[in-house]
Length: 449
Image 1 (cartoon, rainbow, N blue to C red):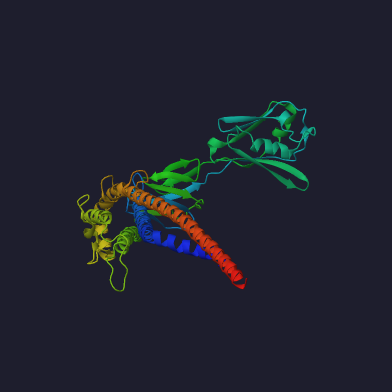
Image 2 (cartoon, rainbow, N blue to C red):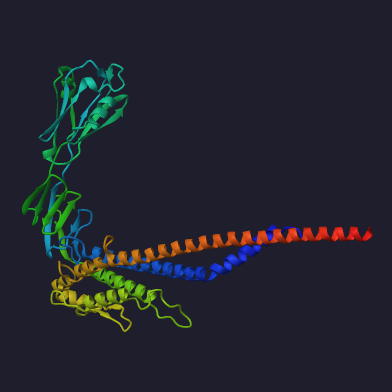
């Protein structure tokens, strides 16, 4: 008999696997269960966070509202408007007499100046001033300060108070153009130098555009004059900012701006809320499905956490906030627990009592804030219920992996033991066969003798 190491290894493998197959199969089933639960909890956590984000976006900050206002202009191209939630409905007349402009000046036919020049180039923007030391503007140390080097020194000055420069070339002549960053007379530029030679250059400055304020009359051509350093008038009327784009011609009809509710945008916000609730409920249904012959059982079927969340959400959806309920504005539940939006009823109810609609959703203790706060108990990344649930399952998964590692070690020990035993047995059998062969040979030789 020849020693067969493959046979010994095969038998050791089979017997070692037999010893661990039952506990290994049990731990495999546990791992699949835990990973399925963890995946389901991650999906639930994601669905809750998505819903909470949608609620937070609708709730906004400060005086955010579910009501959306808009501005309707009688003329195009005269102005644009930003309308906040606090804007009061009304119609306003405007005549634009002057637009705001940035101060722009040019130093024409600029020539390089000697780097030995001493003194400062002082630039004032309104009441704020900064200075360029001319002797340090020679960046390439070639003994001359070029218009490009001077422009760079101004633009990169750490204490630049609001001016930008550029070079303009025309027929071989270079001009240094300085422009105030902000418009309005309060940001006018003033140029001077402590070097007499450079002051001569500044004396030849050309004003390209004067600094001016925007001037608008509220109420028509003879109405109240309003002045702004920019073309945007913030909160020109409560909750409304207007940016004017062109001047009215003499005798031109004033711009009429009508502030009112944007019914379509308000309905869109209500629909966004309804869709967010329904998406959350759909995720609950998927994760908790009871299952049947044609559908799999949900990984969190019968889960108490989902039942608790679903109960909380449904309770708040039926609750009264600011004296109103969702159903008062055409938002109701169907037999499957999903929300439905009756847009006609919503439009009519909002028109009749917009404040009630807003108070239902907005405000510190109303629907959106309440939902966001209570969902935070589940979604908080530090101590929320979902984090605790996932940590618990993750810990169970790690314990199971540790136990599987012990089973693998048991397999290794069993394999080594059986391999030793089979190897010893086969070596013994081989030795016995060799001994038996020797006896047979001796007996045969004795017979012939």
